[in-house]
Amino acid sequence: MKKRNFCIALMILLVTFSCQKETSQDDVSLNSVSNKKENWLKADLNTEFASSQKQVTAYLFPTEELDKLVNTPNIEEVRFVLGYADNIIQIEVVGVDKSGKKLGLVESTVLKDISSQNNLVELNKLTVNTTKKRSLLLNEHILLPNYAYTWIDGWQEKLKTVSDLDESLSYEGKRFRYYSLEADVVKEMTSKKSLNVGLFLGLNPKGKVTTILINLDKNNGINKTSITSKSDADDVYDGARPCPPFGDPEEPQ
Image 1 (cartoon, rainbow, N blue to C red):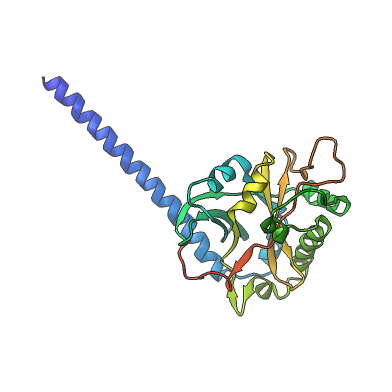
Image 2 (cartoon, helix red, strand yellow):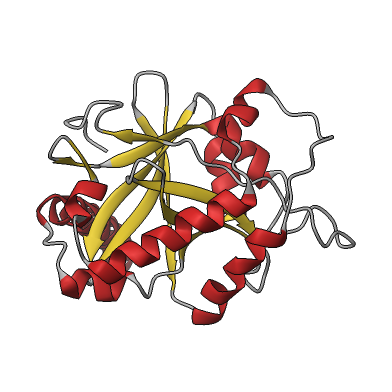
């Protein structure tokens, strides 16, 4: 009997320890994410930042994980939330419902690859399939591949000059916190079953940093519409709304 009671007590102790460990790990993870967001709001966008950020090609989101996120019940919008660590911008995507309640997230992997950067020039040679039927929503967010290249290259050039970086990443003096986009746009991208969805930062015609989404293959090259296609790329999307001015900058992410 004593042996049995000892075993039961030991099992309870192990379960309790395991739960405490998981809770502790979750708390550390949440604190890390929170710190990155806070660090972004006060980060000095100086020469050191520009030099480090220039090495960033894209932020990779695994298509499988992203697909699960946007197909979670009640998720209507995704938000690409900005953070700061290791002298570069960090980005995670959060799924929210109508009220803005957070229902899930996917973290990105930072891609630093010179060859991938050089391959982006291929966007200038690619076209959009004009015969493809798209919803009004998708048409609102679609971006011509050559425009995407110009914007991405424009951001890289901006980082070289290290001038007015705060202005490019802010609205009326308030730094962008996230970019929001309808979940249906991301659903369309994940339906292509590419390995990753790449988020690239670009400088739009207004001189503001925006997000550009491109499906990428296993080599981080631009995904084509088919194996035989040499000129038609999977659709490229922009049009994510920055907060501020869109959305509530004080709303917890």
